Amino acid sequence: MPITAPEYAEPRRTAPALPAPRGEISARLLTALRSGRAPDPVGAAADADGLGDDLHLALYVLYELHYQGFEALPEQLEWDPALLALRHTLEERFLAALRAGVPGVPDVRAALMGLLVEPTGHDPTSVTHFLQKQGEPWHLREYAALRSLYHLKEADPHCWVLPRLHGRAKAGMVAVLYDEFGAGRAEQVHARLFADLMADLGLETEYGRYVDAAPGEMLAVVNLMSLCGLRRALRGASVGHFAAVEVTSSPGSRRLAKALRRTGAGAAAVRFYEEHVEADAVHEQVVRREVIGGLLDQEPRLEEDVVFGIEAMVLLEDRLGATLLSRWHHHRSALRTPSA
Amino acid sequence: MPYESEERDGDARRVWIDEDGPVLVQGPVEVVLPDGRTARSDRFTVALCVCRRSRAYPWCDTSHRLVPRTGQGTGTGPPQRKGTPDADHGT
Image (cartoon, rainbow over all chains, first blue to last red; front, side):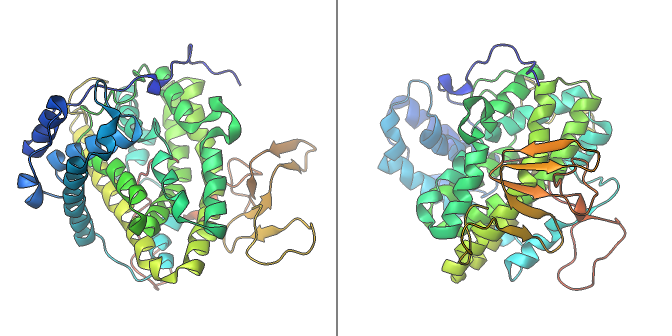
């Protein structure tokens, strides 16, 4: 099947500019990064809103030092002790907010139960149902612009869990990630497929291009993956998060493929989601059986953390979905800066 | 899956049957359909639809999960969500 996207330009060939601040914490951080001085210690960060815009932009910037970095910033800042200290403080606020917000069901089976049924008919609380039924091209462009914060580094945050796993859990996780990264073919890497989707929809594909446009609810979705990936103590949560994404991906991807087809998007755009319908039906099974099953055979005490990862993912996705739908139902852009 | 939780008997290909879902087979796989066509998947593990509801038949597309919206489940466990959250489809 020919790809309709024009010539491919790698989104990560350059590092993005720093985003604009959203409050005191992020302003101080960005000033410190630009000046090359250590950020003011803790201060407002210690009692920041754990789900707030300001905190999440700061966290997002700090995490990006571990992925792609920023234009003109020294790469050594990734391991700067003052920045790591600030990140730790912000993460603790974020974690406290998540722990206060999740239901805390007793086991993995219960946590996944609600995700493993798919009620027929229209769900007015679901973004993908909305897009399938009444999404217009501008909705789909906004959706893709926001999701690009993750999909242009798709599956990268979950790679950090690999050295913390062994045996069945590791073998299963690597097998799924191998698929995510194109099974040895660069043009099949899922991040590449998403860049092709963006180009097809007329979006700009430079890495970090839509960070300023993304509401804090989207930043938090990505920050959760980075947080769980970077902390060994949260390896159970990282695996749980991954499982929740894989379990929910297939039906949602089918709705998005339909929405794109209905609105006249090209083959490259439809292909990204069609690939995920079938791939994630497999990944879900492998992650549940081998990765979660393997991990909990080895370390049964991590079950609570696996549940936390599942529930935190659901909490933040529901929150993002509510934000997008409230804007779109009022015929307003879901982007902070109308750039898509 | 190319790995196993128990000892395998020689080099026999193991097939997993999910309780409510697909049959998992180590890939690559060629499936000969009733009309004579052949479907092929090179994925490391392939999920074969056995509920016959898949719109990507013979591959599983999770259609086995479909339940009537009004259903309240079996009455066991926590109340069910209205639907699945909108994840980062997919990974």
